[in-house]
Image 1 (cartoon, one colour):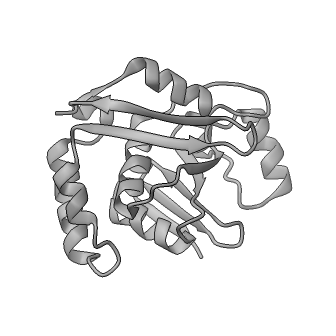
Image 2 (tube, rainbow, N blue to C red):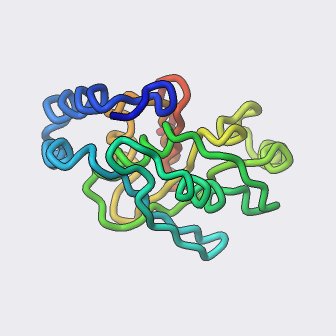
Length: 189
């Protein structure tokens, strides 16, 4: 079982969330019960970055334990691609991304648009758009902006929101979903 102090999730807590999700979201998430049957033994993330051309596909959690070498690889993959600064990505964010991907029963990797953002990058993006938060959770390695070609923004955001595990932003015009392990909240259209 995952140590709640390091992951923010317990196996029992995740199973409770997915049980509730299977009941309340059954018309949208017919495979939620399948996730429950196979949930718990491994957690895998598969992503690619159009910015760097890199791909990542690995199991980062096995039988209740995070794999430190893989967590370092994920942090490097999710680095600020503009200046190559790396920050450890919060495992709660990874778990949210993994659970949403499983709930969607998607076979394609996430397209990672933004993971960690350095303060300099965040300032530059804020100067260009009012939609960039000054104290963005990207600055602390607790957020990711993601896209799936095979799923709509609406489908992705419903899956992430059903987890009740953090913040979910819908950016329909830009075709991506923001997921973070901060307070539970949602925004966007």
